[in-house]
Length: 151
Image 1 (cartoon, rainbow, N blue to C red):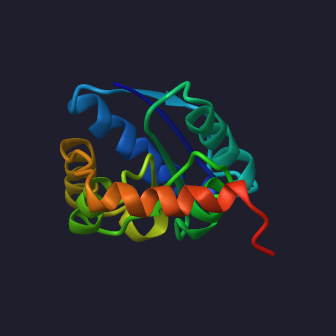
Image 2 (tube, rainbow, N blue to C red; image 1 turned 180 degrees about the vertical axis):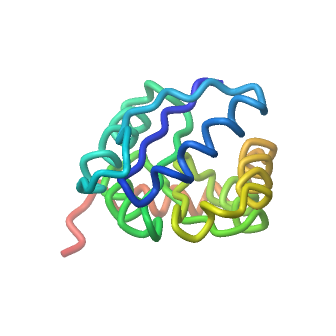
Image 3 (cartoon, one colour; image 1 turned 45 degrees about the horizontal axis):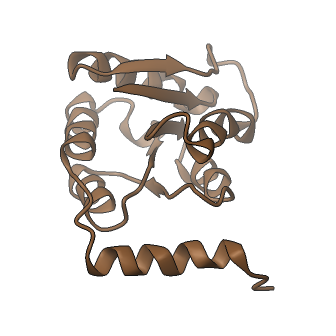
């Protein structure tokens, strides 16, 4: 599977490792930046992946920043994105099984020195399939929020 991936400077190290793991799992990462540890603004890179998932160009994507929070908040502004902040493989699996998350948000600073957990997160993410059923009903309720003014 082709996987769009992006990070800010704080997620760059973990993104480099993540790309290697993706390739070892048989996926093809497409890197939308950043390409160094020079300071940048995380929304600029989260947008690159989020727009492509939202449009349907790609089915799943990965974004990283220092905490994972900023890229997750940015991604979830798109109506067809269900971005999930994941710190471990158990949560990774659940976000696919129950939430059908389509963007994996990784806390780069938390996981950049734990290649074993990064691999477990990616393996769980790509190995799990949405269960549907009652979970679909819940996702439809979330998606309905983008169709009305809730302010």
